Length: 118
Image (cartoon, rainbow, N blue to C red; front, side, top):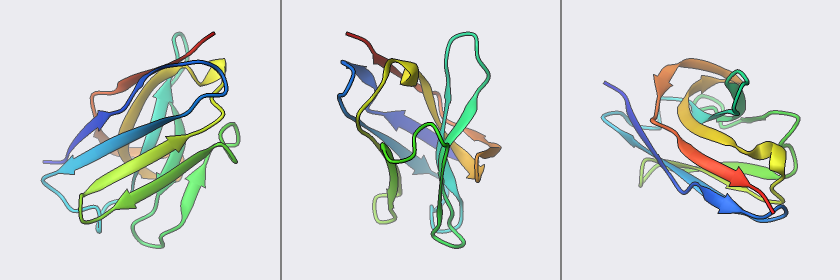
């Protein structure tokens, strides 16, 4: 059973940075594409970024291109999301999940809150 555990959320001011981590358990990241999704209050969950295990390519939502960077460390079985120049509209619960581009393929973590406010 796939298990994903997020960490690294918090509160920052606009323009600040955070790095989210997603530890994968019971499966190897070499074989699964894992990425990040977010859900803001009153909105549907949306795909933010995905790291393809097959091609090594990355997907980013238009709203985060140039500000967020996804990476992974296979030795640590961990996926990261570096978020720079954060904006209030980035405020959401961020979830790690298996992915195909901006679409979920079924497995989720428990989520971590990111709040961007002055």
